[in-house]
Image (cartoon, rainbow, N blue to C red; front, side, top):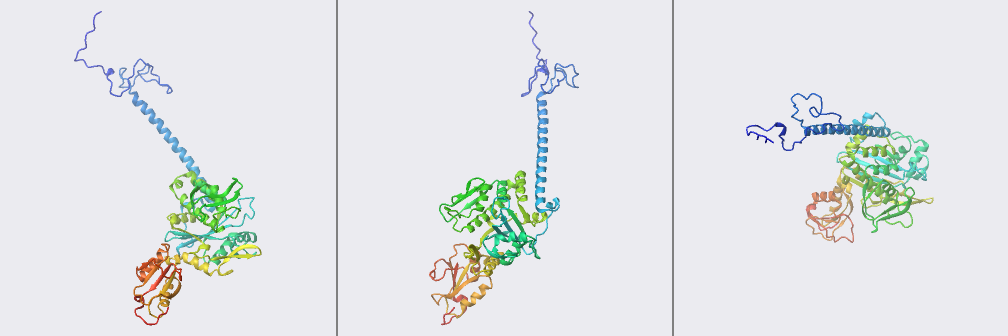
Length: 518
């Protein structure tokens, strides 16, 4: 056999044998049919004419083709996902819009506009919330509004307060005479309440009673079925409450939730995350059943947790985890749309959302009439065997309650704190404490008492601070008037129990006298 002649060094290698790093090596003799695509590449066992510029010795760059098909598949997948999101999102948005329309009425497009709220020009919007069990068919007295709450929003300072109104408050209804306030809604619904300046029906009568007794104008109302609590809490994925009972064991109410066959409340002190059913049970628990503990304040404890849960729900609903989740927003709209009756319009709700969104949970005060700046403004009242509540000053005497509410809606932080101040004359100047009292009362200080100090030689006014940091606005205002001479040493503890005791010195009198008097 004649050996083949060696290739000349000057002869370049064939391009068909040149392989770039990473390039697929394809044997032209292999099958050229691409499974699942149904095409044969030209020049690979095909009779079709090769594409221009592609010789039989130049196989196509299959790696690039594969990447080309992957890109097409990826684009189709993305388009499909986008369409799915648009369809589902559009359906959810339409569903939310329908729920809002069902609740607030008006044109669906009103949600894109805002209308100024009543009370907004004065800087405060007041809303009356009432809850009943009308959605619970087996419940006795289901239409009684056992939960009543006043929500007051300071639109200028981004603050608010929630004030619970006890269901057992003894009031005079429009047609049924003296009744507990939780019967006012039923009375108004049954007898067709109608009065100028108030909505018609049950919520109108309840609104009139609260407005007149508490001395506060009410701009809007919302009647809420208890199911709204359960559904709304589930819609946002649960809420966290902080149980702080005076009982070291926490709280326990063995009354049974017949839907779940569990007790209404069994929690240790500390934070607990509740689902909708648990939140609803806690809103109902009063600790009245045998074996209960942690509910020393009975219904007042229940309303305290109701206020806390409302703030927690507001915070959770404002969170990005809810606002960015169309499904949760839809469920929340369902919870509200199916369980709430209100006189807000859709555009007004939009405005309400704009006003309340900047308000943080820490800027919302939780208030109760049985602990109004340390005072109980209510007292027990037994009438015909019914345990009820009346103002501490006497039946139908709401002056102290109205003063407390006025303090809360005042723009004066000192008035809101209502910290007690005692003035003691530490000099020989006649009538000094009385004169200073007139000045402080004019600035909304709560001067509870005046008297004489243990000395007549006080030069610099000093302030005994017994507030434990609970009244910072009052402390700052006193410092501005009398100077920053504070102490926590209290030689008058056996005589006076005020938040602040001001011992007036000659720096306030300008002169001295031998006669010591208030």
